[in-house]
Image 1: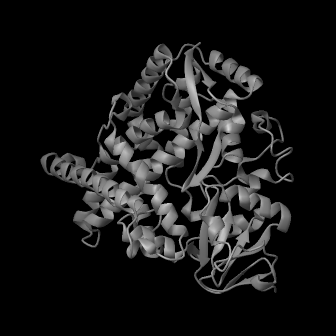
Image 2 (image 1 turned 60 degrees about the horizontal axis):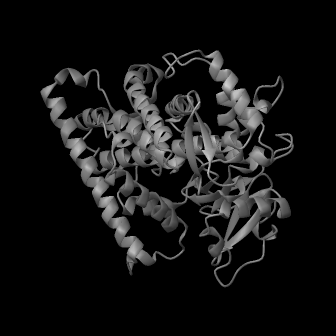
Image 3 (image 1 turned 30 degrees about the vertical axis):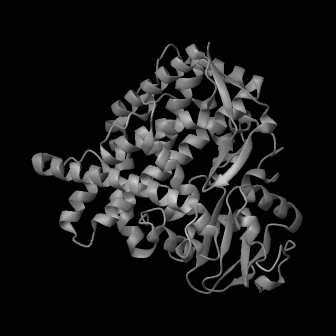
Length: 456
């Protein structure tokens, strides 16, 4: 058995070791560079603590499938989420997580998504009208911002029973407040010293104000749904949204507090906005930079006929699905996961002590030439060929018991929104592909990706 201390380590930068690297928005790219140089197992140093970095495909799967019994998120991450009142299903561990999983899963079951589709179709229709307006004015926009309005509206309907309709609003204070929250949470999760507890910067104060604004809104939604359940008792047997499900459970289980409900509602709102919107933006970025791919996409859309938006049940869209998989491979919005073992264990031939940070490189598989031929090249056809790429070699939604419960909704949103854009419009980037920057701030997003939208 090897000790972590025996593994190779990139050069450190000062007394804190590699802490400075973790704060950079391109740390996911830096990690790929280190993997190429030091292999699929190496170590970093955060202050005096050694960290195991793991990029071996089989070992990554092993660790993911060992959650939640053998591995958990870093305790420091749960502490940060707990401190700001966001310790919901995303960050909770142990029995707390198991309980919250039972509460959130029903909303994402196929039967409920079928029931939810008409509302999803209304939001998609609004998105298409927004694209029509942008095509008429010729305004250049950050495409990810347009998709964020869409995903916020979808998530708010499913989780809260509230129609934000941010797509049609000029002012979107709630969406703006949401945009302030996760980047700061991400910074705090990576910080070895919780300086914000002793000294508040301007960004910290803005974070506090934005978080309070979001909490006030969600608290209002909770009270509204509580009144609705009182006025319409039939909803107890047929709840319409996640808040109703949790409020019904609270009446049965007094250990479920209002803070638990608030944390889960906020978690779904924040996580549901960023991940799906960024994936949609990266898909558009990749297609708009490849004429051959755009032609293949146009052919599939023509074959679908004159559907204004995709109807239920969603038709097969193999090429859109292939673009989605390729974006998840090349531009994964959740490239890394920070875990620790609950007890002393071993990963392969490496001994890992309880509480040792294990940085799992979820994005490394996508660039492994043994899994994907010519891995740096954008090629959706790799997913369509007999014996071609296998989606099981990617983990965009995690794996094992902690597989993302919202994955089916996310893929529905992606197919509907992507079809709404490219079935009637074409996208003209306002900069070269090399000018769009990958920025990892809790999720990995395209910075500087401005487009004009034109009618086909």
